[in-house]
Figure 1 (cartoon, helix red, strand yellow):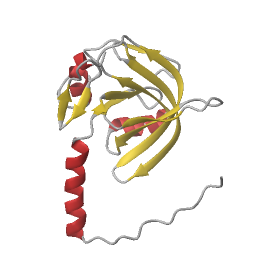
Figure 2 (tube, helix red, strand yellow; figure 1 turned 90 degrees about the vertical axis):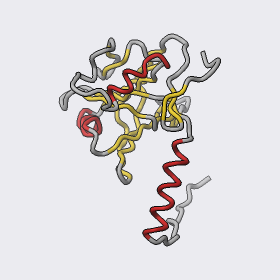
Figure 3 (cartoon, one colour; figure 1 turned 120 degrees about the vertical axis):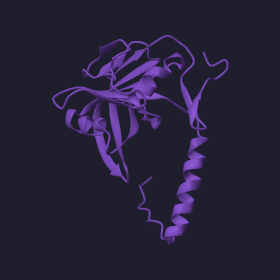
Figure 4 (cartoon, one colour; figure 1 turned 135 degrees about the horizontal axis):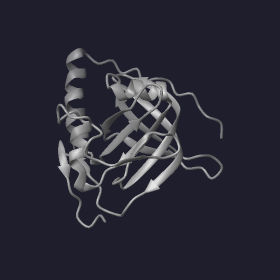
Length: 182
């Protein structure tokens, strides 16, 4: 099957309609439960990290490295560091480590983000959280700026699977615990 070119949508919206849709979109997305991850990087551009809820698998073909994507706000220091370091690690947090998520989200002031957790490294040298449910170590395969965010697609070069526990989940603008998830 040949890929098709799809024409861009031509729906014209007024500024007021766009603002109203944005508010509904934000409210709707707050109801979409996601796992909480810490995306980290290290290299020539320095060590950085950020809390992310926009992470998903992209591909796991049998003849190629698996890929995943993360979305990071363009003003985040982590976005610039990932672009320059060309590596990152996605750490899926257990429900017991909301403190790490808060630290990397900027809710805890004054302390080094990396304090309060034990960090190791995998193939790329990006920090991997020892307590993570899983850490996906990635080389940057592509980067696309879409609006306010960078979309990073990573080629997974290593995976560290931790203890089976309930994941930290974000929904309705707060952390939630899943019953019977472990």
